[in-house]
Image (cartoon, rainbow over all chains, first blue to last red; front, top):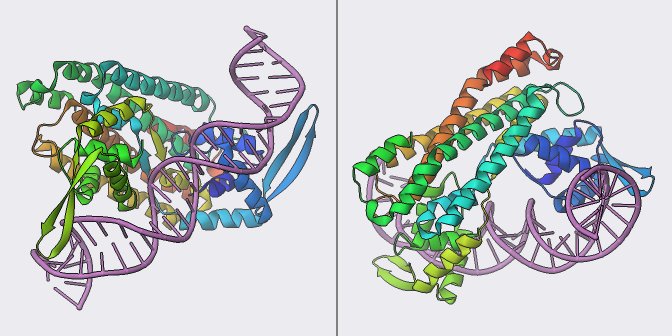
Length: 199
Length: 199
DNA sequence: ACGCGCATGTAACTGGTTACATGATTGC
DNA sequence: GCAATCATGTAACCAGTTACATGCGCGT
């Protein structure tokens, strides 16, 4: 699943500029994928060269022209073909959890900072997901959301909520255990009671 | 967070071969990161060249020698330094969810296959996570788990459980809505009841 | 005055994946 | 007989990130 396919996908919502594609990706796909300008703009150039999208330069006052990209019928076919060839994967790369795993090697402040940074980010996301989708059930261009969009958004909210709850619930006892140091790590009753608390 | 740091980290559990590092990574970090031999072996060679690990070739009967890597004091310092410089991130790249998002463009079988593939994988992971950690509370080398390991493992189990439950719960109604086609996508009572079910 | 939002792009770099190459042992 | 496990590595490739380059308008 490369940025080309993702861009084609975004353009099914209607004509857009590269800048808008990124914004749209961020709004709808934040917990699914990410892409920077450095991969979006070159991808769009390729797509245009292959006639999968058309470009229209729109002049703007006191600003550089913007290029509005639009899906062609061939582009739409290609999108579907690419999606069908895409196998169903789901990968996570979490520096945060690696840091937690090795927390016993790190200064307490670093661990706390790492947790708090993630909690803050996730709370922010959750907050504006709710603001965006809970009130109006519109999708991208004022159109109603497709079942797939609802599925993906619902997934994001559900999993993020669970993750956030876990981290916030564990934070205290986790930090306390680190404080206690390695001598407390032999399998004792304290050890087992934490395991129960971790449910 | 590159494979070098990850490898150093794994070696805190004791001396290991490259092969074992990958296995260890898969067992403990499956829902956190991933790494192939193509990145592990070159990483180990670099680490050895920088004296962050030592190598001992162990002859084996009827097998190629294995190279056992061991963390040096400098390696351990470097690991800690690298971890401290690592900022707390958590990224997801989910072809699965992209596929769901665009499900209305795809044949039903593709969508079903995609869901079932993920469900099967996640159920497998959850199953052998439980087998591994629920019975014995040991970590890697028979040592007790550190609080960080328990945190990370607990996170994995919690989030995976929530994700799996969501997907399995939604599967039926999602597929039915796709069947119904786009004309049912205006905000009706069916729409709203699905949104409630998504909680 | 500073930073953010709009708006587009390039180039170098980084880092991981995939495929290939080799080969014996164990268990079904 | 075939697949899996153990065991190491290389090389080509792919794709995305980061930093840079440009520039105006608006709000604080």
